[in-house]
Image 1 (cartoon, rainbow, N blue to C red):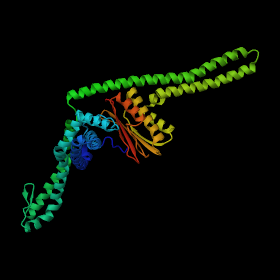
Image 2: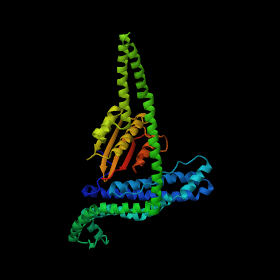
Image 3: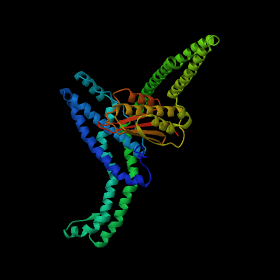
Image 4: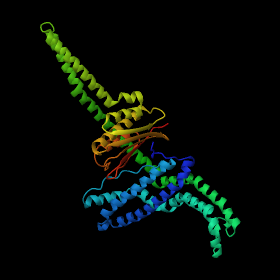
Length: 424
């Protein structure tokens, strides 16, 4: 599987990747520092009116970097960082923009992110850049020092490598094993330093205990209300489908059987035709009931589990969908149902809106989280703030403390990642 959801965190694959990941975090820190200055400048320009138009996009950029840092901490080091709140869209008009800016500036979430953008470029960049620096310094000692010490010495320079004054051939050769050791040290301690950086990210971006509990209570209230509304809507849908479908057909069957009963002696042929019609109607009613049950809880999901249910779903759809599912065991039935219908909604949205020809669904279970990644080659432009499909998926996952992340630039591709806690 092309699994970008949970890259290697231990062993030599993680150690070899750590210097490159550290450089990426250093680049992220540089971008943070620039955006921190832009956010501060645009906030100060709010009284002049210009900041009303500069502050929201600069804040969106800083929030995007913070979400990327949270994701890197979880993917590379297994350190879960509390997700940030989704801010409402910026309303139209000066007064609406002014209220949005005021709410953002008085929101603690903003100050957590701004605090992170000031501290991470200093402390975080130093920690994250250390593995790459050690590797480069070690390679310099092992491969470069034996060839450059003489020109430096002849030019009157002072050439030191660690604690060795490299001014002779033997000392230049001594730099080789030291350089190898420094290189190995850079690779070996890389994952540990990335974990330190991830913990720093968590400390800077996560709310304090009181704020976290308050946020948790608010989330539980919202998810409970959403779950109640969803259950009520589902019951109304089932009642409507039964009333308009199977129930109406069963009533018609009863009337036809009554007519057949009256005609069976004096007009057997007509009675036989009515019975044949009832038999056909019973088959249609049975099919409607099966479709209704499938909409509530597909039999293949109950019998075969999530991977096979998603494969069956992909076979019935109009897209060419590649499924890569790796689950070592069955999941709890409510979670399987939520994941199945989330994937169903995402594939339906892809077929309806994205103009895609192909899609891929990756499902993996790691560290107590169910990861689902849906990718398509469509036109992109999926937005969580527009439409009800993605919002419905987000509400469905919220009941399980799940999260949804959308990456859908204009022109595509669209990548949607779901992460759902599911215990051991």
